Image 1: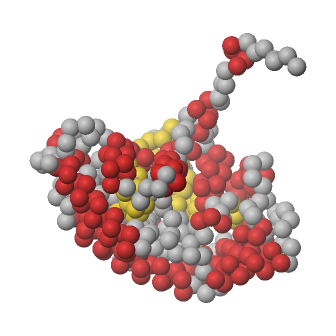
Image 2: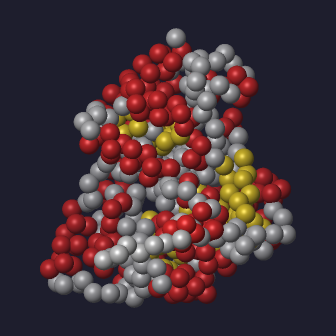
Image 3: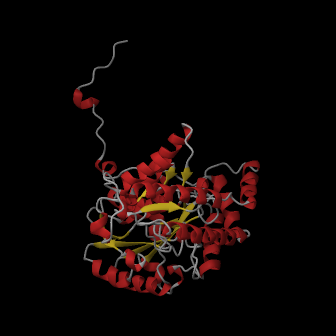
Length: 416
């Protein structure tokens, strides 16, 4: 058979503009590189992936096994079963005092899909989306995918990356369509106080903009009670809540998330989802119902352990000469500043540089750290800052101790 002859133009793969505007998730890229090195026999301390090291609780696993045995393996409603949406409403009401109807809830294949559906259902080309820095990687790329315009709102490390209503107010313009919040924050661990969240909601609602609040880490707050904007009277008309079972119940691979918003918006999100993934896994939905309505003891146990690990990690990071780190008040990440080891360190931090020549970025420093010390971290460039590394302490104390020992040795060598 003769080979088909293609013209040079036909042989080119011309990608769409929308997919060309985005890049692969930086955290996913770190995971792939670590897996490659691990397959080659490398001894790695992995602080890259934001994934609980705890197993999924037994009662949740048993619910999935029952679903399989009972042949609950067909399509469900695109936005999730009524049972699951009612369970999401129940759990959120029990934890935060909210009142959402199943029609105001969509279940998705993880919180990331909920964010994608919401932004793509709301944003038109050129719409402005205010995005505080540092930000979780996916927000920036999904805004770009939807042809929106990210308006990066810098927070100050010296103020613990706190975001205020006044900062949001100053960033609003006639083109602002959406303001994104992530509290507790991935990557910094910053937590916006409840009163400040209320003021931010008031500012955005008065302006006529939507507020998207990512509550993925809402149960992992160390020094105050968890809070949801959905509990405020009149908030629902201007608010999109994004949630996930991945972190709260150690169910990352199960892929169950959700959004809570006015029914008109959740209906649009269901329409979009009906042409992409359709429903979340039927088996995972049954497991999610058990997670949300069953015992919550595992959540409290994980919170206590994460706080113990946080205190250990911050203490050890602050022992490293040239490294500074704010205290995370939520989530399970540390976000140390390593500018002293970068070529721009003197200008940024105003102190003596510890760098060796050649460390031009946190991305390059992270690669060197992986290659020379076998420690996996995510560079700050993924989150919109130039002088940081993100370390997940969702790991055993033994691994944390070994990894931090390697970090200290690596930075000591960099200083010499």
